[in-house]
Image 1 (cartoon, helix red, strand yellow):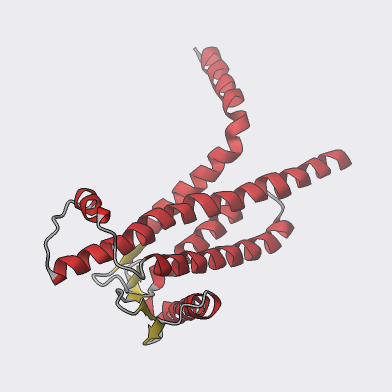
Image 2 (image 1 turned 90 degrees about the horizontal axis):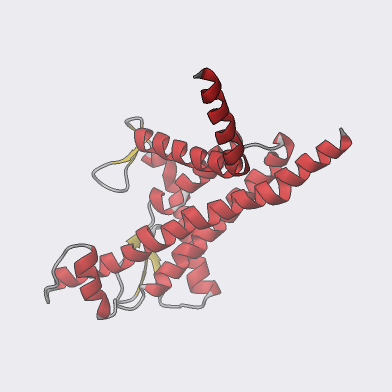
Length: 230
């Protein structure tokens, strides 16, 4: 029985061998998600950041303001939308559009910690991690700024009529021709991009690509070079 078990385990290892790297990446991804869900929570107000029950919101204010300032500069100055405004340091909006407050969850903070965790526990030379990690975090910050800027440009105009039926199905709600319902649907239009489409692109797309570059262009070539020297 033990011999059969050993043969089965060996066979399984051989079959999974080519996928070892991607499996470990996914394991690290899921481990981080689990740790984050256990340790980090939002308060009743989405602005509140609770880590192990301790309110750390005040420590994120600088990051919130920096993110809002950069997004404002990109949309207003770089893209040339002169009717884009910023008030109170963190609230951004177009005229006749909904105002959006930049809070800690908009800054990409979770993604920065996630990739740092993945790279720290993933295979590869420490010396190369010391320059690749800061570069990757800088890229993640830039892409998050671009993500927010694009979302603001998309929602500068009211939601299209076809979105009403889509939103009724997607969020299980009913359209009523009232100011309150219009505002709710406008917020849902924003959240479709902010919490759904672009979040998954940011998570699955950018983080995966950064890992793939590390794996294929840095770690494996380094490993082959070391093997040749030996």
